[in-house]
Image 1 (cartoon, rainbow, N blue to C red):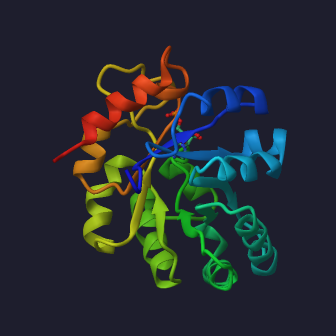
Image 2 (tube, rainbow, N blue to C red):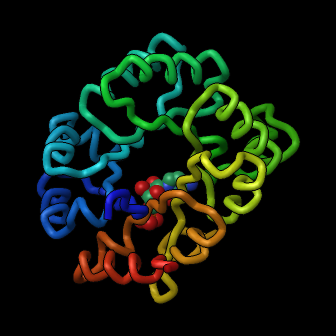
Length: 232
Ligand code: C5P
């Protein structure tokens, strides 16, 4: 499998826990996501090590700052050899463009995607911070801005994928968390979709954490999901 569609979220607080899981996976079958908890607890050396082990790594640090600072952070991430990284679309046009331009001059340009609206925010929360019109409208507007600025895609809920695929065209990356195989525990995820539903409606990559990381046999859990999304 040259471009695995599953990104396993390494939501751990230590190198040991992360590496124990990684040792049971295979870079031919999945990519990995390193988020704020693991990165802050363990630092960039782990990311470089995962890249050395052959994994495509999505560095999920959601940069949001002035354009100069975000551009510098993106360059630093690219030096670690990550496959994909992300920023907040709410950083605005200049920040998004600066991030993209910073990566253009790196040797193997990582993919750059944006978070539009955090799924933890309800319409009332958005109104409180001055964003009127509701989450759906904000997601649509910010995904358009992201595409206009030349980024590769966005993070979105599986429930938004079908509409966004129509709006943004076939090549825009739609990366979806909140995925639960039919038999799995929901955990704290409320608006979930199965891997098959997400892929069928147009998701590019699926971010999956606990259904794999907490499974008694993580590799078997991953393989069951890969079978589920094999639409051939
Ligand atoms: O364990 P689970 O499959 O719920 O993990 C999903 C991963 O995706 C976690 O790393 C979580 O932080 C991330 N995520 C999410 N929902 C979003 C954005 C990111 O669950 N809207």
